[in-house]
Image (cartoon, rainbow, N blue to C red; front, side, top):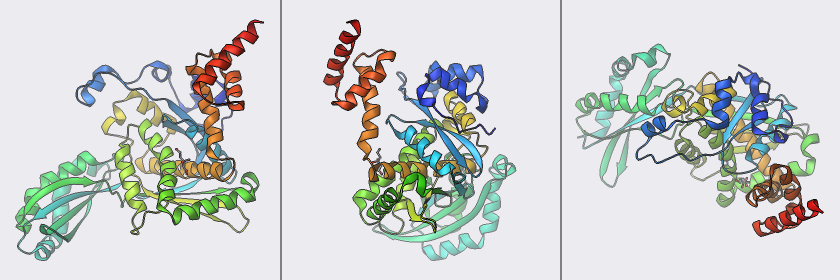
Length: 421
Ligand code: MEV
């Protein structure tokens, strides 16, 4: 379902009022209750990992204003860091003036690796596999009829030999279209089950049989235009300088990409997707030229508007794993309104691009700390004991003076004292 994402003033509402504002996304009373206090049950948590002793809560926020491939999208984000949700919403609002983001993701193909050692002749073994490729693909697909029925399955088999300190190894790649799953379970099962067949063919010994998180067959790309009148010519120049800085300096490139992953990992976490897999893949992709580089590219178009592009592997899922176990992830998926993992990857690429724009814009203009400090001041006000109707005034005073806990305590006392006079 497409819910309007052009929503203003969410910031000024209370959490329950915000949920009510998002009713257009098809939230039910049950969803509302889960969002505002429910969530994962102890029973489910206890089945999910080992030695469970409780829950670790993080806030779920919603970024607004996103339009991707002509559709409005509400973006669920789970993150502990202030400013990220606001920054994404703000950037998406600017991109919206030019129709929002255009994004395109590859089909959801993952790579399963099989390591074979001790072959008499790895090149010969490679040939044996490749000669029988079509028959082997058929055998693989016979193991996963449900996935094949859904339109997925093993698409190809690749082989190469690598020279290591422990001799030549034959490395086989099974390319599996996992449809809307991340794919680890399916891929690992197919590779493990097929191993005896490959060993028989190649004459070696099988070692590792596991998915690769370097999901280079599953690349997502997004593009957005940020109007020069909304951004300002000087800030655009600053962003271009920042982009070139990152392209030529690894210290900066890592931070640049970290900002991108602020958005992508926050969406991934809201959907109980594997953030470590996504991050490992993204950073490896950033190094594909042999030098760690930014995942985004910024330039000016003929009218002086800022144009940004992002490209990275995104092995993301709308089904399987914990997505269907955590009720909050199911609601996050409903909010997003995506139907497939491909659509999800496209939206997430757009979020990464928006997040990068927002960070570079803040850095090129007022500096990142100002915005951070405003939000940090609100957190401090709450920690210092401010009641809801005192938070705004105290946060304002903190920003005007000094944003720290002792100051918050002192100013709160002063505020209350003045109020009682
Ligand atoms: C902070 O979480 C992310 C930034 O450092 C990203 C960047 O510097 O581009 C602001």
